[in-house]
Length: 115
Length: 115
Image (cartoon, rainbow over all chains, first blue to last red; front, side, top):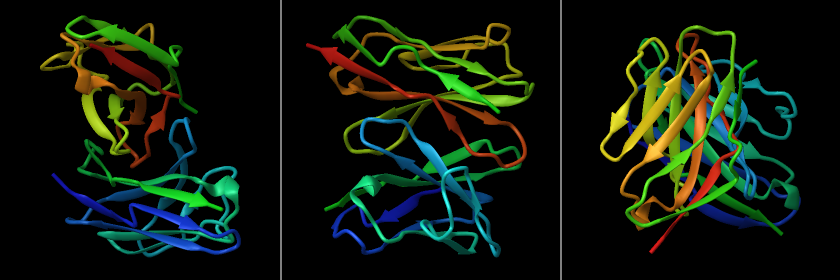
């Protein structure tokens, strides 16, 4: 099964700065997704990272705030831009593979705290 | 759109006892997967069990089993012989079987196993 390496595992950032989170998969995967998990909450989908094209964002999330790259089938980044304390969350990437999405994998998450 | 509802924000169980976590969902799809994920304090999302909607037989994985009632759109998780290591957040999730779509999560149930 695929393994996703996500980094950084945690960071403390100043208001107004940006942080880029990376996810590297050890095999080619069909789809990659980015989720946000606010404190004590469930996982909310931010966007689907599309290989070679612009990401598909969910309602309430915009590219200017959360730019995403996916240059190939094994790598994706999420940037949290112009951060505020409200962005303090866990950010997780996930990937699927298989003809029917039958295999799902998660990164270990990034704990972000914004001061 | 699909929705997943977990009506028990918190539950506790004595070590070695059995506990059942509830989950209901709403969808117009006929082909889909249902999952239970465990999230310990380490943040890692760990797959507990998966059910394919076209299978009538309930999935089991060692001490974990589900009661899948497709007509009622119910998908409960039973943990037998509970262990201290089972203490975690548990998320119920739904995914379409095709179309490379992401998981839709419930709000989660915090399970505490008491010695």
